Length: 74
Image (cartoon, rainbow, N blue to C red):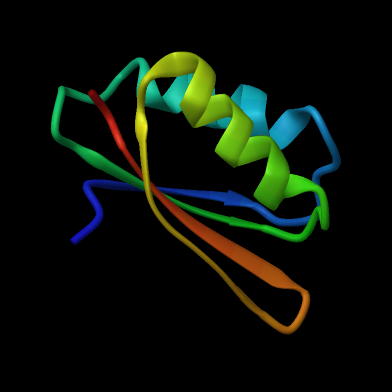
């Protein structure tokens, strides 16, 4: 279950990543951030972001034009 949610729909790169990074800083280790976005490049962006920051990408999915992600703060 997500600890926090971020609606990044309608935002283009790099704003979804920047907003997620800012929000993750407010969470404790083990907390989960759920993100929804519409930027088609967000799947690759969030995967790279997690690889670089060490946070864990728990899930990545899409429903139509909406992309959903769950990131665990480490």
